[in-house]
Length: 614
Image (cartoon, rainbow, N blue to C red; front, side, top):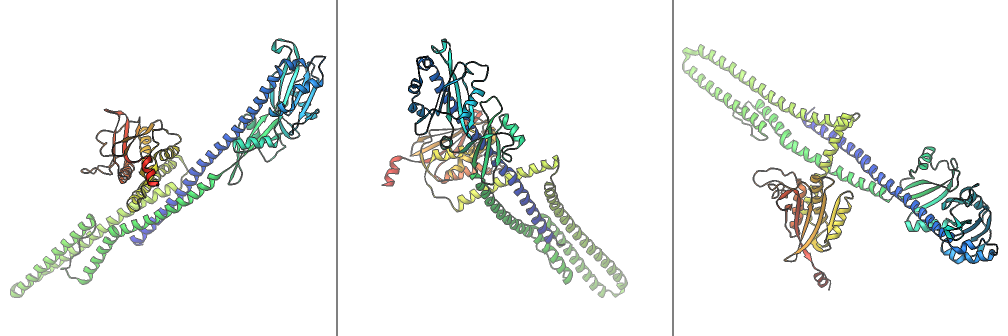
């Protein structure tokens, strides 16, 4: 197989393996990360709904407690009071406004002496659902406890609708008198009230009476046990919806539960998949470009010089003209080999010229003909030996170069195969290295794209809101501690101003760590300019590097800056906006106290905007 063909095959195989590994990493990391975020969001929705139910329960409890403590409530237990007194005490309009649907009054012996149901229209019905009285005796007024359990509250269910129940004792003379009875109030959590909670919380939730085995297929036995201990169950329902479940223990003494179900849409899921497809397309396009570029470089600097060397040697062999010389092109090793071959040809040509002179001399001196013939034979043998050595040297050089190239390519292929067959801890470490290198390669590509965009298609400079751009970049780093001060200004820039803050924030967090505090502030300076300051409490920047961090290489020594292309792009963007950028210590003279990046932008004042609008 030719070197050219083998090289092409290895490049294509390496590229295919890289794309396969990259696609696997993308799905494993990105999709899983967003899935966890969506699960956390659904869990938060369930917790918010439960908190709202708790709030509604405390609201009913406060109403019941206030009415139980009133003197006029205790008086109704008197012998001279009748049902009309109770009706006047619990006015339907007041109870309806307080969200009370059922009112029950029990005497000290636990017998119900009054009950009424307040309808949605504000009417009064003297009866209550029979199961409601049973629930109250099982929870608020258990047998053997005179006056019931003070402040007992919780959820139950009647006619498959959740209901909040609260009971408080009624004492004669407020809390210092004797027990007269128990006041119980209830609020029905019907569909309208559940819908009201959903509208307020902007979610879709419902409460269902639950008994183990009655809803097979909703939550499993294991999930039921976890939910009883307070866990929130999140299940995926198709690609576009998540469902969250929680069990709420009922008020009755026996184990009764209400199942809370929250349905959450997943708008981010499809967007992430679309983004992955777009990124994959871009990576494939860049990989194809990379393949053609590497192929071109290999052909130009390695394969073509070797082919020309092989063609030249064949031409010399076929022509036999020792005056021909090979052109010295290619890398140093190839040029050195060609020079050795040309020198050998010069030596052979010189020896042939000497041979010709010797033959002429033999012609002139016939007496020494025999010696001349022997000398000629000897010279011929020397020429053959030199020719053999020349061919040997050529083979050695060619073999050496070919061996080195094959070793390098086989090494690349070995690493790729090692990553592909990840199975144990050692190989996973290699995979982590490849992930890190892939991320660095992605950062380099994005930086190169940014530089290309600045030079080839620079966005139009316009009026932008500085605070909005800073908030957007802060929002993309939810875990970072970033403070914004006095940035409500309009400046001349474009949407790529966010790249400036992105790269500065990245460098601060990279060198300072996740606990670094970053402060962004702005102040007006003369000549209608704004000076923007980005400071951090990280390790700071050495004085020797402060003038160099915004340049890719130093001017004299070609020493690479550890800050990479990021700050170089920042400088390019700031200067394209007509501003300047520099670095300082956060506290002058104290490098270890942190660093400050300052840059200027042109200010757009309100009157200038007004005049331009007119």
